[in-house]
Image (cartoon, rainbow, N blue to C red):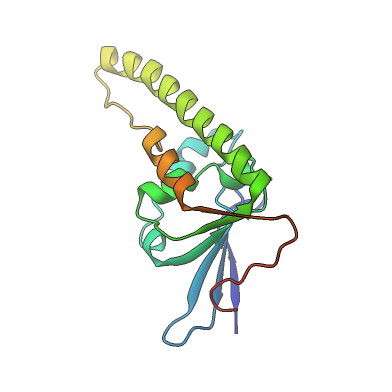
Length: 157
């Protein structure tokens, strides 16, 4: 028996993330479908900053349907927190991920830099970005691009 757990995009349209658990020989195999960034709401920074916890090390594979931030924008954070398995996507999605995630890391770094200048003057704790360019590079190295419409054999069949 398989189970599907909605971990994002519940009651909203951003932050798509779904955990699929399928029967395995010794234990359920965990696959993550999408790994999206929450956007457009006041609480999104807090939601995006929540750790993946043990899940980052328990996943067998990640599948990304397309290269928008709300479907793939937290991939480098997942990798930063310990994910080392394959990230399946189409070739076109992979090309877009390279541009989009690099840009997101750059924008995030600039936003954090500006925010930390204000926080430093106000005596508040400094913030860390969700991920950096080195995390994006490690993420892209894990991507396994496939031709559109090509069947892919995932763990658990």
